[in-house]
Amino acid sequence: MDSLFMSFVPGDSIIHRLDPRTKILGLMLASICIFYASSFEWIALIALVFVILILVCKLPLKHFVHSARPMILFFVILFLMQLLFTEGKPIFSSKWITISYEGLVLGTILTLRFIFLLLFAALLTTTTSPSKITAGIEKFLRPLPLKYMGISSHDLAMMMSMSIYFVPMMYDNFRNLKDAQLSRGLNIKKDPVKAIIALSVPLVSISVRAAEDVALAIESRCYKSTGRTSVHMMGLKKNDYICLFLYILLILFCIAY
Amino acid sequence: MIFINNLSYRYPNGTLALDSVDLHIRKGEFIAIAGKNGCGKSTLLRHINGLLVPCEGYVVVKGMDTSDTSHIQDIRRVAGMVFQDPESQFIGMTVEEDVAFGPENLGLPPEEIQNRVDSSLNIMGMMGQKNHTPRTLSGGQKQKVALASVLAMEPEVILFDEVTSMLDSMSRNDILLHVKQLHENKTTVVYVTHHLEELVYADRLVVMDKGRVIHDGNPRIILRQGNPLNLGIELPPVIELSRRLCDSGLITPAFFPLSVEELREVLCQLM
Image (tube, rainbow over all chains, first blue to last red; front, side):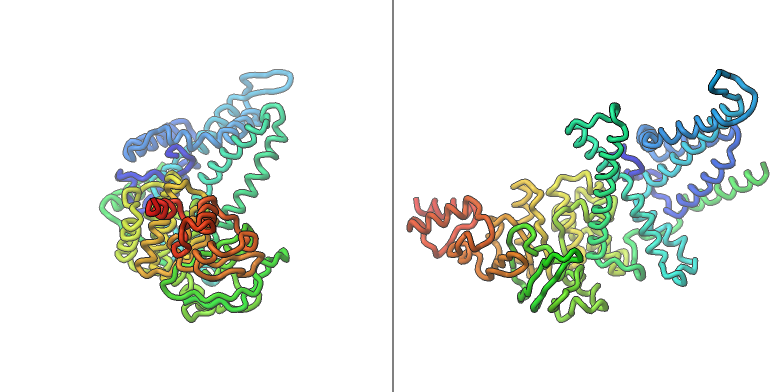
């Protein structure tokens, strides 16, 4: 369970104890930096920051590697697209394909960008419980004039939180479903199209039913979009102010370079 | 406490789930509802919790009509519901957060929420699992967390929808003992079950069939005297044996045993 995709792992590290708003802001800044990273030096710097954060949060690296594993196919496609369709100085050429040096560099950097984006997101969801993320997002959204659009900041935050909650749940369901179908003779390698249908159709059906059940449970426990409180008393502490100061330094550094 | 008058409900696909149901549940009562699959037990509970609105008739919970949406939050606060599958009702990623969800919706201050969470987890003996992820718990523990989540809202009535159907016999007995304790602490209990041995603590049994109430009374009298074919429910071996022992005059019908433990006690007294 601890190695599940994007799931929260309770702990008592400095990162665990940070205010969720500080961590959400950090993820936003990290995302901007990752998308601006256009060289291997930048990527190496981002990797270094990530490793330091992993050490501080005292969780095994394996957990985060597992978080990226379900996306491997996407990363491979992304890399191949860049590798095969970017024009430049050829380093390998055959009758069918030509691989350029620029394609290799661009493909590697782009793939690494997405991997680190996912890893930083996993860092947030692993060290922050969904209800704290909800409370943090809700505080961020509160100043927006959402009520004029007929929605509340609580509703939006709840939707986001439930989306995060459903990822490990769907992953669990997928694993159970895969085992059940394999035990009934499904051969994924021999008939991949049939396998996709045999797995995706019941998975969608189970997920819709699970969503309906959760919706009933939420309603039954008096959910309302206004006037909710939180068990978590939020407030910025010393470590949050240190982080915010570091964020400002990072922004200034990015502007300067 | 709860008045159900001429309640009928038809699902959007046309299935008639409840057909002219009349029921009055008194404060502090332990009422069990039994019947075959699809007889309307869960639909009835969902009406009491305000999750469904009657097509005909009305449901009044502590003076509030469930059809009146302005009362719906108060109705759900008075009548909490524990569902059959605990996993489908978890909202929090930790046990503590899940139990806190209800009180958070009531808009209570953080200290009060924390007190309620700790108190309900203590009652259910789940304080040690406070920081665990609900999905990693055993079936019985999951159901205890689900019950703690409802207790944290301090309801006057608790609706149990086949809460033990996915549990082994030990966990089932454990949950049942907690239900009994809640009833002893003046909570009104409405308990839907398939396991008739669980009726040992019930004051009253309602048997449903095809959306109608076909029996309503003392569970020991209904199960002792009722014709099994007319009961609409399959009798477990222990109740069958109790009936035969009563019929043969070996035990007196004054105390009709409903569970293995009760039957053992009666037989021990005989020997």
